[in-house]
Amino acid sequence: MYPIEYPLWSLLASFGRRLTVRMDVLHDEEVGVYVATSKDMNGLICEADTMEELKAEVERVLRDLVAFCVRGKNPALPVVEWPTV
Image: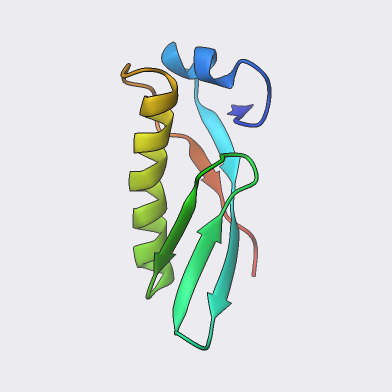
């Protein structure tokens, strides 16, 4: 697998190469939501009530962001590296 933060990741994704993206997750107790961001993928910010919902939302957003970056081709969805709790 190839990390998204490395050079030429979008070119490799366009050829179907599996990518990885590291996530940072925090729980905002004041409003009761989980928030996920990634330094590897600019623009990736997701929020959900549960971790399960957050993981599903991250996958949906990643699919859209990667497809946008490789200009509409059908790349493989990146493997998400979740932080250990």
